[in-house]
Length: 266
Image (cartoon, rainbow, N blue to C red; front, side):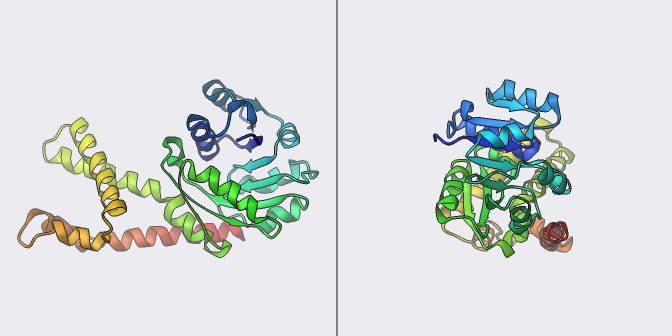
């Protein structure tokens, strides 16, 4: 891809996208310009990926066709004041949770804006992401963003009023699954397995279960019914999960994260 790309913010999500795009050879490192106030962090990313790095936001804005805003939501106001406002013709892609496109368009009126909610498995090209178009964005802007995101995993287009729900589900979702894996490992260790064996089994179990849902054409409930035989071991474990309202807890987790995203959006 011949366009030039800028990343303002080299934290977990910004660096995950950079690493993913470089690893998959979607964008040549020489066409990526990244900026972060943390000099050590940006130099580390540069050494690993061979991209161009700077601590000057204005320098990045002057050199790119597509500018990713990858800062924390609480830092967005300060950043928007420091970004040069002569970004006419530049596509601005915001991955700041809870920040509506309108807010960015008001501060950078000449730019076209697309809002994205990715997640950190972008680092291993297994990202789940969604995007929506701002008022000034063109269909081809969405197509470009979708092409980039799809190269790192799964990408869906949604209306902006659903971006908070996406944040609660897939944006925050990896942490929920890490918790599941950790709990499975701890359960296995309590039953006598070594931590290494328990980790290997738990990780593959989660990967395998996800692939079954993705490829079998069956719903999660149908797959549960296939393995939860009456009088068997699995159904005993499921009874405990239902007793402790694990299903409801996950639903509440998605709800809480989505609500926090709404609060951040003001």
